[in-house]
Image (cartoon, rainbow, N blue to C red; front, side, top):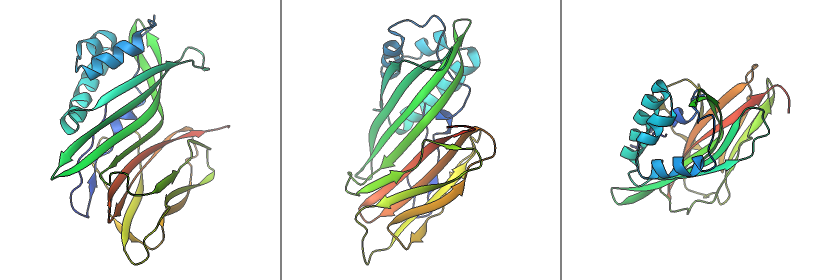
Length: 241
């Protein structure tokens, strides 16, 4: 359920994990106790029959297509899925983690993605799903870069809020490059992020939430002498906290 393109040169073309954020995916009605485990096992075993059986036709085709993309980029990726209690009526709640690594030109790129998956069940098939609290990173620095991501999970409609990507040990004489960009939830196009030199120890941005409830997505990249980090974060835009 994810997609990315590997880093190119300093003019980076970054593909988002947009299909993770599509607000029309979900999971099934008389939900069995072991459903989360079965879904996890099917994804890890690359067994798409389970998806075809529990998702509607359109969703099954979409998920199969997107699943193939993540497997193509990270062949050894693994899923961990846990069913949690939902406090929203008629909604089920899964906490999902996806992780993997890939070696390119001798460098190890590590994928780590966490998100919540809210869904209902219609006629025994997956329907009305929603991805929330998505945070995905891809990095090739072997965790040598000491970095903090201070991005809220939810904000009020129309309110101002801060996005801070902090390098806790900035380099004095070395130029670090980076950029951050908002994206539309329904966008399936490649998203290009052009790097610029960072004069301070990270990316610091004040922005304003949309005027209507929904999901806002931010993606960015940090280029550091120790490696690169790309990230994607979804923010819930709500009309009351």
